Image: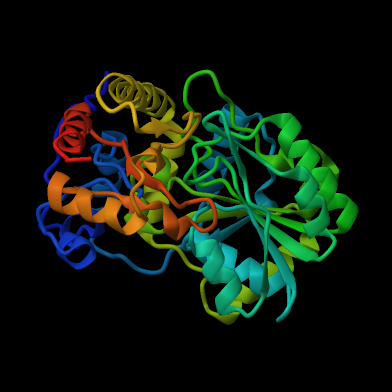
Length: 386
């Protein structure tokens, strides 16, 4: 029903992915597959709602309507079997803002904060900038998939105030199982560690897998969890800046809100709210078809690597539209891999090293794009004198 093969020209739109290529890669002509937004057209039901709202001639201060909350609550129930109450939902301009606000709200300088690299790099900034102590619980890479080192986690939890988790995980594409989340939660409950769960990719689940919000697993876990969600990755509206932070525990919620109030980060914008309502009200079929299409892109990568580039491999994809590619068998340094990708292949990927420990030898490729673009990228990879 939806055309994901359509090419959308994003150049000249002040796109970070497309219009900052020269700044980031030193080459304005690389094929950019780095920033985690999609090159698919934002669904028509979203753009139509925004355009209709824009026709009203006044863009004054607005509040969150009942419909805003109702569509989100219904989406969470329908898609994730999670029953959420209106009072639990707090606005944040973005997930990174929310993570940093949570660090300020629930810890003090010198307190330990656990991260699980290789992971979304702003987690590290949230800890470092706010002078907290980073406790690294590095993920284990076994048989082209990642596992949590629970023995190490149990040790680190004794020194921690909180943990930042990526669920589903960016960049390694893991969709954590119920058993994994329960074991992580059990360790956190035992050690009174607050869980900050970045679930921005919650809706981007590949066929055969299921996302489980960790807060949905038990009342005990709900009481210690701050869940961060947004329509931005799901519906390609990241530029509108609108996230929902779900906190059942009223004391944790108050502390979080007070940090946002201190920075006057309490208001969304008209178009972000309108887009969110439309997305959550009408987006089921679009998301399902889009992720089926993305699965086809992942399948193409895996087949191509096996037949044409056998020294490259892909971490088993379970969620997101982010491919985590292992270049270690090339025997090249991270610097050399990046240089060859930019200079010889004309490809702009995200270096694995920015995601922390365990990222060396990997590159992240965004396959949330038309299949013709993925094919072009593979041809470029084959052109390199590895």
